[in-house]
Image (tube, rainbow, N blue to C red; front, top):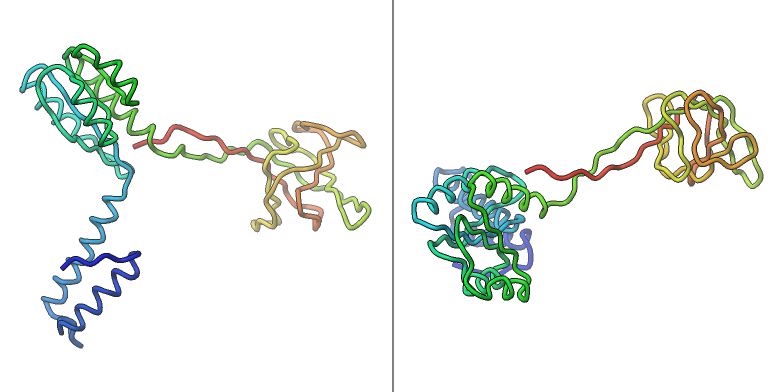
Length: 255
């Protein structure tokens, strides 16, 4: 039985109601119940997998043996973040039909030791399809891995850039305060992200919107120097608090 549902919650409710109506679910679980439940879980696992990001390719090779070797090498690429789908593998030059199929399915065309039919590159450019050629299998494998990684969101890594200890709190007008601090490590930079720690508790996190050396505005203050710091939206500083500054770096994702 196939029935369309708006979301997973509704789908699970429909399944539960179906099982109740069919008198499959009873007060004491049976082996049949467990099989039905595992079947439903497997169904949703398959649905979840189908929604995962995928990299699709169409392969062309010079001979059948090369095609089989290339397919076998690509199929052992492991990733829990992205799926590799080999939509088609065939022997012979890359043709306009290959490009059209790639356009329709959102795939790249990869050729191993093959030539292009006349007009293929022009057609590929017109259709927005990427065509790759190479005669070395391990370079194709690396190419496919790189292309798969390019489809993933960059990984964000937090890098600690500075640490300052609050030595004295200065009260300004309208309830605003500035934390008189000594930079202990790295440097403190205006407009960078920072968090305020009291003991092991994080009390605030935001941007450093004020940084001063004496009465003058500063862009950066390095370790060993005193400065005045204000964290955007926070004014409850105490002596002994620590301000840690950081920056977020985007790195190439891994498979």
